[in-house]
Length: 477
Image (cartoon, rainbow, N blue to C red; front, side, top):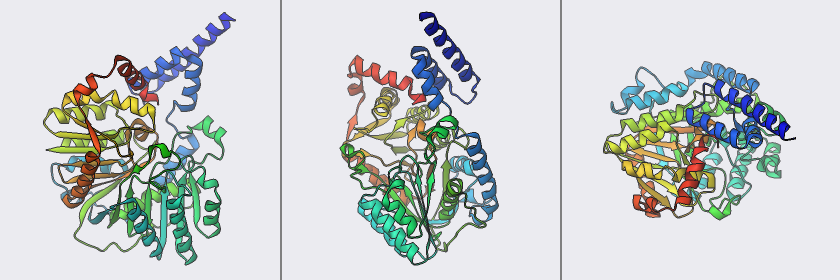
C-alpha cells in the first residue's frame, strides 16, 4: 500500500510538474506556487490544478470569442475614435498611457464626453431608472451580481416597463454572480415581459465547464447603455448596499459615473461583444444614439478578459503610474498585485510621487486580506501611504492621478481581475471629473485609519508568517 501511495505521489508530481514547466504563460511566482502546493499536498494540489490551474475558457469558447471580435471589427466604423487625432486631445505627459490603453481593444480617445458622479446609492438607482423610463430605442444592461432586492427589482421593473412600450431591452447577467437571480421568478417575468435575457459564462452544464474551462472564470463587468446616448460605469452591481448575500460586511461602498458622449458607443461595443458570446445574436450595425453634445473631455473604454492579451491590465496601470508627476490615489477592495504593478507603485513613491492606497479594513475574502497585508511593509518602506476604510466594505475601484486623470470601472487590483475576469473601465482626462472622484476618495480616507510602518512592524511573527504564506500561493488563488 505504501509503495502504491509513493508511486502515485511521484507520478502526480512529475506529470503536473511537466505540465507547469511547459506553460510559457505562467509567471515564475505562479509556477513556484504550484510546485509548492503539488509537492506538499499532491492529491489535493493536482485536483486543484485540474479545476483552477489553467486560464482557459475552452477551445470552442475561445474560438467563438475570437470570431465575435473579428466580426465586430466590421462595426468599427460605427465606433468613434481616430488614431490620427485622438492623442492630440491628451496632454503629452499622459499620451503614452492612453496609447497603451488603446492597444488593448483598438479603441482610441474620443472628445466631447461629459460625466456626473452619482452622489449616493439611491441617486444612482433613481437616475438609472429615470433614464430607462425615458428610453425610446434600446436599453442594454450587463452586471456581475443581480439580486431580487429593492435595487435589483427596481431595475428589472424599469426594463419591463420599457419593453412594454416597445423599447428593445437586453439584460445580461453572470452565471455565477447572479446564479440565483437567473433562476428566480423575477428573471422569468422579465423574459415574459419581452426583455431579452442572457447568461454570460453559464453554469448550466458545470461538468463541461470543469472539463474545458474554470468555474471561477467570470464576467465581472458592469455596463448599462441607454439609447446609445448614456452609459453608466463603475463598481456597483444591481444590488442594495446592504448586500444581503454578505450582510456582515455591509454597507458596500461603491462608485458610479453617468457618461454621455462618444465614449458611450465604445461601451456599447463591449456589451455587444459579451451579448453575442452569450446568446449568439449578431448585429449588422452598432445600436447608436444622439451624442452631439460638445465641449467635453477625452476618454476611452478599456475592456480586458481571459481571451485578451495576458498582463494587459497591470501593464496599463503601470503605464499610468509611470506618467504621474505629483500624486496617485487608488481605492480597491482586493489588492493582490503582480510584480509589475507592485514595483511600479514602489518606484513612483521612491521618485517622490505621493502614492495613497485605500483598502477595506474588513474584507469579505480572508485570503485577499492576508495576501494584501503581506505587501504593506514593502509599500510603506517605499513611501506609499496606506489607509484602511472602516465604514463597511469599500468596493469602489478608483484611480486618480495629478488631479487630471481618472480610471473608473470594475477592475480590482488583484490577480483574479488581471487573469480570470472580464472587466471594463473608462479612462479619462478631465480636471472637473477627477476633482469629484478625488473628493470622494477623501471621503473614504476620512472614514479610514492610517496604517503606519511601526504598526506593521509590530505585527506578531505568527501574523506575518500567515500573511506571507497566503501571499506565496497568491498567484494560484
